[in-house]
Amino acid sequence: MGDALLALSAMRDLGSDTRRDNYLDAIIFAMEADKPSRLRHAALRAVFDARFKLVEIVDEEEGEFREKLLGELAPALFIATKPVAPQRLDDEPDAVFNPRRDDCYLRLIFTLAKQSDWRTHLEKAGHIERCTSLLDHIIKNNPSILSVTSHSYYLAAILIRMNPSGGYRSSLRGATLASAPDSEPTNEEECRPTPNLVATLPAAPEAPTSPGFPDNISEQEWWKLLKRAWWAMRWNDLHLEAEAVEALPSIVTYTLDLLETPSARYDAGSLVRLVDRIYEALDDDEAKLAVKRLQDALGNRAA
Image (cartoon, rainbow, N blue to C red):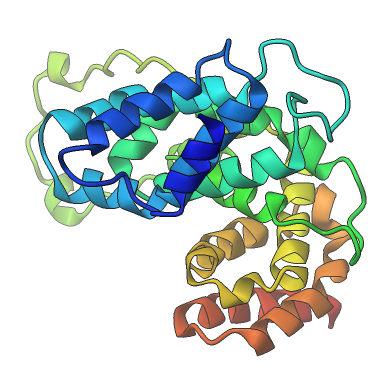
């Protein structure tokens, strides 16, 4: 069955409208926890190869197949890539982090997370936790030109896409709003009659918002991940891949946010040459403009 799935994955699709339901059933069956790792990984590869079609179906279709795709495939992907009894070595098929398997997994989740309905179902199925569990494995080694992989870039982009707060700390935005100074009353406001006393009583305080998953990632971990993401962009020629370049402006934003933190303050200089080379290589105008902001910020720090 694994060979059949690999052959079908060459279609980069889910087959005809009359057969795709059966194909999806076969993929989900192959991803069950009790199936051999080779079969689960073949099913993962088949889904990876059809990832753009998965986004297209959810964007453009309505009906039972769309709901089945969202409701059943997201949990199946989680099961297929989260070993029940993890092996110790990274080159073993059911290791917590397997470079080959998780390259497919991260790039797949990166693509699906562009679409809001997919994001909702991925989060519900536990994929944020799955992605953050890979963080230590991806940032633990010092990067070198000979060993840079794309894992860090796609993981950073996924965490950014799945983060509704828009910052590496979900609590930052609330703190900023809370600390904003009240506006001065205008003359018109001063002349208004005094309102009823009951109406002026302060409202009951809102329940504090629980911290989002970004707050479970330390500042230093964010910095290491983003620094490795820039290495990955440079040494894997990701600037040539349109889908990867789409995420670059948001990676720039997060990098800029972190530049003034203790983790980055004395280490930001290591990005200067990387960012310069990426800027020179980019063809996409929007991404190039975003990278120029970071390039200027790094230049100002060095001045």
